[in-house]
Amino acid sequence: MVLTCPKCGFKFDLSYSRAFSCQGCPYATFGDCGYVKCPRCGHEFPLNKLF
Image (cartoon, rainbow, N blue to C red):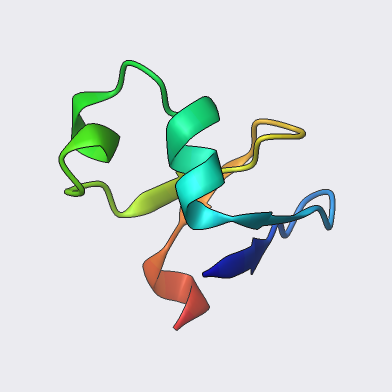
């Protein structure tokens, strides 16, 4: 799933974000997190607002 950061406009894949921006977060690891973090600027935003 390709996402666009609402802050900086960077386009990235959700799995890329989970692998690099959310390292160490247990919620992202187990898929229970409702947020996504931009790998470029670090802005964190709700995933449910995208659908």
